[in-house]
Image (cartoon, rainbow, N blue to C red; front, side):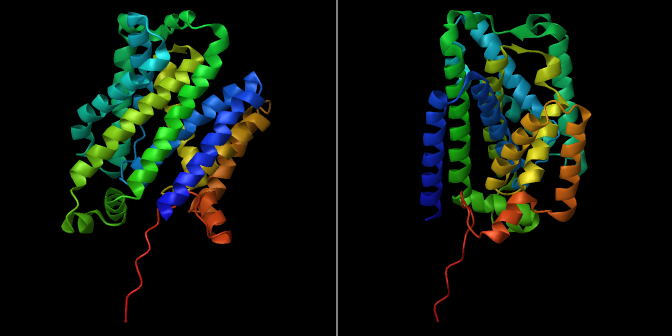
Length: 321
């Protein structure tokens, strides 16, 4: 029943996203592309931190790698970049495999800082590599073969595709036995391992899938920007934004990041001309939610309206007497 309700919600959301290009102006479409990419990233980080216990402050490494893999591959091959999102995802997955042994030796604050150090190392390597444009970055030169009128709709389609795949993957994962294993790990890692959960391989699988999807989302975002540099692609601001969205909405839920992303983009557009007042507003909001609503805004909504849009809760069957 949970899975059926989730599929219905996804179909309704997909229908709304499919209609959007026909009713929205170009500026609104640009914001919606950003929204889809950032929401996908927030959902992925939420699963990694909220369920797998991988609190990565260096999450931006997957975003930067995804963008660079797409740009370099598309420019070198002369291929329309929209077809190369799977290549960007492959780059993120391989990176996850490479860094997993180092990350899994750490936990808590050490894991958070260690992941950030890894992201900084990758950023510095890219910064000093002339073939990757060094500090100036690279532009998506191959985009010139795509008619200008088609660029925005195709970029929108790429961002929506990544978001839908991300949502579907999370719903299927969390409604499977592996989702139960992740929740068991979150609640008590030692007890989960005693019950037969292979914590190492569960984390490895989630990190690889999350890294692949995050790189695809990052690549979709930079299709809109048409330029990527070490400063932008590997910026800690990516993780700060994602962290704000997840904490605001509610970590450890699927609906939380969705609500958090909606509020974040609404505030950004409303306070776009407010200067430093914008940062004061979102900082104050984050502190208030952390102090007074540790379950996030979705936790508050859930208490008022006991209904999940994308249910992942498991209810034990009633015992027969």
